[in-house]
Amino acid sequence: MKTQVAIIGAGPSGLLLGRLLELQGIDNIIIEAKSPDYVLSRIRAGVLEQGLQNLLREAKVNQRMEKEGMVHDGFALTFSGREERIDLKAHTGGKTVMVYGQTEVTKDLMEARTASGSVTFYEAEDVTPHDMYTDTPSVTFKKDGKQHTIECEYIAGCDGFHGIARQSIAADAIKIFERVYPFGWLGILSRTPPVSHELIYANHERGFALCSMRSAMLSRYYVQCSLEDKTEAWSDERFWDELRARLPEKTATALITGPSIEKSIAPLRSFVAEPMQFGNLFLVGDAAHIVPPTGAKGLNLAASDVYTLYHILRKRYKEGRLDLIKKYSEICLRRVWKAERFSWWMTSILHKFSDDPFNQRIQEAELSYYTSSEAGRTTIAENYVGLPYEIIE
Ligand code: APR
Ligand code: PHB
Image (cartoon, rainbow, N blue to C red):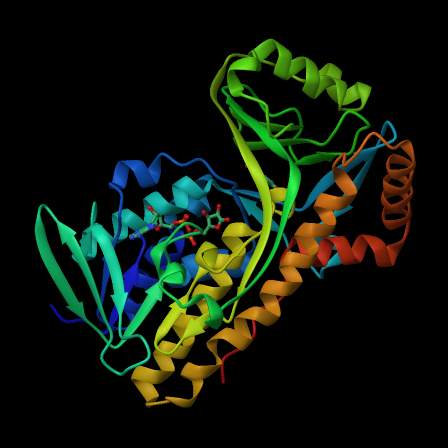
């Protein structure tokens, strides 16, 4: 089999890249280790920056998002028993974010790919990239007991944090930057109306909490928990009590609770692999970097990598611009590190790192300072709505 771009991984990165290339007539094949149902069963954050919304529009998969997505022009920070709203729109010249689940984005992209007839191999085993430092790379895999080879010009490693693309690179060719946080997030989904029409990020001496949503009747809530915690130890009742304890009184009183329909614990990590490209193999999204979810940047950062690679490949195939190919990593990393910084910062001011009350007061002072200053609010708002994409020229 032959194609122009072999894409490893059918998460949001791989599917979005594949769709954008396909609309430009650039042939691509996706090779995914899991089944479509498994890919769609993962529940993840759902705050879309305008850059990602525009990319989904360009990919012509925006119909359901425009209908069901919820535009948010602000969010709240709570600390010291008070609530401060960050007006995203007012501080960014009119920018907003859209709340629309990542699972829905993935579903829309999968449906578009099925309708277009582009080739995808699901449940592929032993996926292996080869010869990425040559002009004739390839990807091999097994499917239903048969061995396959895809000859290609470029390989996009869109296979997430545990994927094979990054792991296939010699350890001395790659530099890893990492921070693992000493806590996790316990999240639940419940068929209840959200406590507020906007997201609430709570700093509290008992630990962080987040009130989010998927729709008018579907809420997503999180509390910071210990890494040793098990979901079985958290009854719904214990979860709701803990959430209420971490919210200002007015919000806690307004909270409507119900049975959870999903409950899971996720660790928090900051991670960057440099460079993001090895000859004709590019790392895209979680394959190259992870952010803690506090800034809602994971999917958005994957989208800016996709934007960069899509435009570089478009210029390569439409204008013969081979010079841009080598620039992928440096262009991506400039934005990646800024989003890493914001996600790390949001994590550090909102979570409980120790029992030291000094730390708690410093966090409260920092939140109070930022929210009482125009400059502070602007800094938070412009990072939250997403820093601009670098135009590829
Ligand atoms: N071969 C083929 N596919 C693989 C392999 C492999 N060896 N290893 C992993 N995959 C697949 C996974 O099954 C998954 O479907 O690659 C896909 C990677 O998808 P994601 O992990 O969702 O990563 P990505 O597409 O980059 O999505 C961006 O940013 O932080 C986040 O939550 C956000 O998941 C979102 C991500
Ligand atoms: C979510 O709704 O799952 C969510 C929202 C915002 C975040 C993280 C997760 O920062």
